Length: 381
Image 1 (cartoon, rainbow, N blue to C red):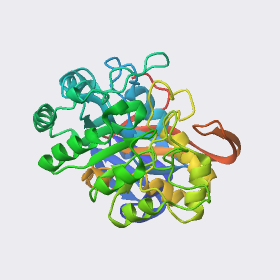
Image 2: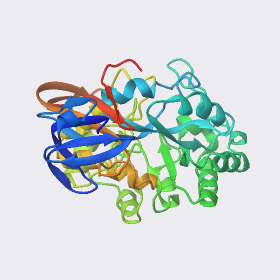
Image 3: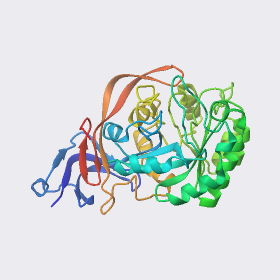
Image 4: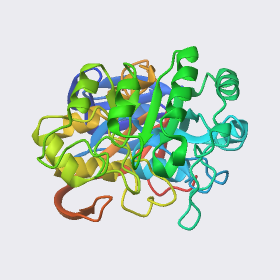
């Protein structure tokens, strides 16, 4: 007996290469069967996915979901079903000083899965709004390696690495210092660093050589300054060298970090991002980012094939996290999935600097499967 049966969809799992019409049955919180035709009378609940895609539950590698605990937090349980996302990775909303509250009051109460990068700043991202913007790394006294290491070790089951924001906005006059501290902590944990770089100083040339294989450069297709391309539309040499060294390139759309111009140029040079993520937070959840499904749709309209887009939000972020059990849809595996529809039409998109893109495709979510349970888009949580 299946607790849930999704019928008639095109099942696509980039991790295994599976791509064909099939039914998917769930039981006891896991994927029980994937086959051409499973008996519908053997299921407690049916979902018809005819003409739609059934994919692994999507992973959004860069979000801010400390809802109610920070000014930038949004509600992951609200966003999950509408964006096909079953796993949200919070990118440094909380630091050592408030991580336990994030865990107790948000992570442990959420229906969707939440993992986190711990902010190297003790206070996390504590002042992020339209009227109040104070970078958490502007005072190096907040970047205490001992406190960060102790907190990360206490919560290693959900901490995926260290997050650091450097640049004039996030770090003020601290320069590259917060990154060096974050890398020292991450080395002790044998985990990666996710690095945010906003306005210089520091520059790409200071940040990228410090990153190690498996570390993540988020906002990788950002606009000028610190864009990945120069005025002659060439990719900066330090970007190319970083890829050769195994640095992970993550989109992290957000409020100010995705430029269609940068993206077009990078894609024209066949430089694909490794991961597509939304950087969704309170200042971009109503645009321009909205959620990761909208961000994925933008890349479809920029010419990235759907199989690549799906890989960048399933198996690719799962590999970055070192959690191969996520981002895949296979018999016996975790019972997470999403039902997506790709619609043709006229859809307007906007990037972080206000450029408009007239697109002809957009992905929509019917809902998600979380631990074998169907949650329809728009359903009350």
